[in-house]
Length: 437
Image (cartoon, rainbow, N blue to C red; front, side):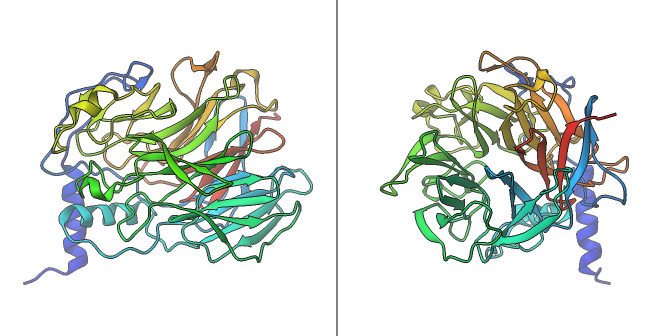
């Protein structure tokens, strides 16, 4: 008798969960400026160890670090991924998900689809940016309005003067902005295209403005894990692009960055930093996702190597010439943590040890045992450089049964100095501030 398809799918997922490898490194060995890098372990069946999306029970929150407190700044959102704080204190949140794409065949794509669905990433994109306003200053937004709608999987946002730039999945667009408005009805004007297309493997595109407001920098993740779709599908991908706002011309600023997302200017040095999701399917201990400064013209290895000159033998043909010039990232955040959000803390509300350090939102692993990420961490800095191992800032996103109440994505610092965290499974924006008790 033929078994029903849902039963077969469930059985296949259980089989996958039981297979694959496990981490053998001591906790924290894959973090810091000199992480331990094991030999690759390419298993026949990929390691699949997702935390199924559950959502937050009533009156439950993440767990803040000692001395800090957390509350829900806004709830009942639709897959909030990214947050941006306007000068007047209003908070913009991109409610968004991957665009619709043609169905792809093969066991790898089937596994990916099932994993994403269980992780809470299978919902349709709301394709909007909402505005949140806390007018009375109590740490909770009492106003929530649709600010921009009918976008195309929007993600990054940047205000330059009276122009708001939004990174859709396939282009940077702009809108006129007036302080205090709660809705923009103008049609978008395209500034520069971004690599999209029907494949569009890493669809999230983030942007940040230069300090003088003349340029935007845009992240464009790779169209594959390790170029298995061919390098012809990777034009202007796995990169940070520089967009000249006067002309709209674009150039590759840095390359070999598999999936960069969060970007921020380090306050002591003025240097651009980013967090990057590294490659999968060569073991629970490889490859650490990372935080790094970004050099103009720099090449960071993908797909031919990782963490400098560690060659990925899966990539054919090899490019020893590019491997030779691959830059070693500054700081490993841990294997498969899925680092997405990045903000440097320049406020004065939090205790002094947070000053000038990096706040990173780790979305959480699917290709590792035990799970990693599912937290917000703080990386201390000294003299413009990382100084010490990551410190948990917000945890408790996964319960004792291995289910995800939430998953952190974008992070930002509000006008008062509190930290905002977008949670795309809990559909919440969390606010972290000092513990008043």
